Length: 263
Ligand code: ACM
Image (cartoon, rainbow, N blue to C red; front, side, top):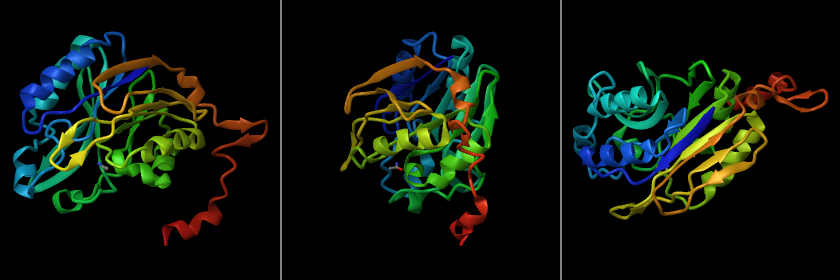
């Protein structure tokens, strides 16, 4: 199967422009099976107020952005993972949605909020879930979650073969160092789809990355250009957790020694 990403700059508050450009980029990869899009792809990132973030949010069950991706997924017979500014009643979540040819399959609400996000969004409260799409099992994390090895481990322990990671990264080069290490340590593929461009004083850093269960960087995008890229992966490689003869990444864990982590 082929996994890929679209690296581009969603247009702040201009859904028509975002949908046109993401459709063109995704459409240039007609044989991709799983396509990851950046964080907060339906709205943009740098909100001046909670009211502005609220105005540009949508409920998962009634979203023009999601209906568009559902249509694209149907036409391409593909799956999309996209960052999504989610409204649920009065609450806002910085979410990620998994959409397939038959519609929405699942979602994730970002647990580790970055800088001003803490003033806009509720912390994720729906756990870390893994979704079986037949050809593989998909886990989702978002951007600053890259800093917390615990959540990568949970997604992998729950059976993820691929961790899809929509991003709006602003700290140059840090997550791109960590992602191949998370991939290696957990024996999973990671697709980090970052955005590019500028919103006010915030500059986004591109370098979207696909990493293998061996920790290899299979591909990395440019720091500032639009890019659609997909690559063939071997899902079986993410299901073999052996790291040496007699050493299993998961089987060798000594969880009794890890209790300190939950203090
Ligand atoms: C980030 O979490 N958007 C840096």
